[in-house]
Length: 369
Length: 127
Image (cartoon, rainbow over all chains, first blue to last red):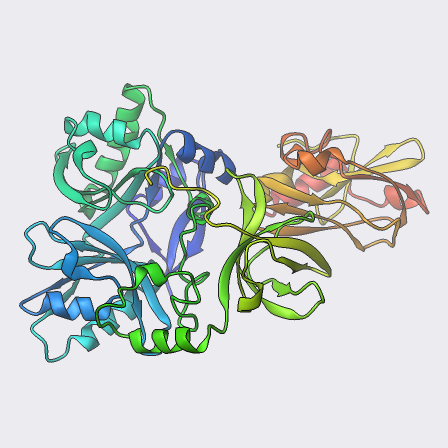
């Protein structure tokens, strides 16, 4: 299969990016400063992410509200126009099809669902199939919609300078329409880094206008805005405890196992609810934990987790050196009896068992909380 | 890109320099630039290594990279500074980023390694 390129591909090439294949796309994994410097830049100043690979699906029509509310785990009936929420979409088995952001459109008539690139085709097919016989239209608008994220403690300052203070008035998880560099943009006060900031949706043919415009405007007002690659995006989402599909989330694990009960509204109906409740009542087969290595080493995805006695008790879902908290750490699925904070576990790194301990989450409290 | 003329090189990107009757090892500037920011170096834990054995692992943000020793010998010193500052491998691959010193069982193995010019030619064909 041919890999897709975002409209900023040439920009990335010209600006020192290392490009790798990711979820069917050729995307920058890092730029010249490297992922650790990029990570710190987002925590300290501001960074720009090309996330056009993410998908956007419109769900509209007479029965759209009830239909979508049954499809996702969050309670959308409480969501005001312009507001958005993190949610999951589950199989009847309780396994997670995808995690997503659901935006209620400003006119209140319909929804935009933002999904992972790797799951776009699967999600679209699932939503269309479930909508059969209902007065609902499902439209994949990913190709014509560009999406970038602008994150960091200085991001709102730059945005406010561009929008005459309007961005700062948008509350967290809400959104509004604005015009940037002559381009009509949907500004969402959202993001996946643990920092304040925005995600911007706008016509794809203006991809570079807004991207370069933000960098140039930052420079003009004395704020350096760095482009940020996928490697730093991963470590930035890990520290505040945000799951990533394919790592913490998949069709085999339920939200209850993945510490995502908070994202499920059990006082309404949704696909997968029964199975999740049954599993909770009977006892979870595994639980997600965060851990820190007390021995020296770097844990990585798929490494085996052992009990202190050497029994296999789970696997590493995400493992890394986390730059801001300065720890060798990760998330692992383990048997529930090993999930308590302070529990000693072992991580099998190559031929050696390294000591680790279950730690309190999140490692980094989001700055806007 | 630096290619230290005093060092010799293996095809797996380790550099080796003579220091009296010892050999000093590290990874080449080319190799560090390819693997990116180094976050951890697993220093040699055994006392002796056979030629071709994995003697250290350099871990960058995205990958764990085995280092192979191109001569047999006994480890006499490891660079403990890398425990706190693994990024010395990035900032000074041929200097402060050295990994270990070995007393080789046969110094003539050193002469069989690639010269800086040959190694430079080899990597220029890789990119």
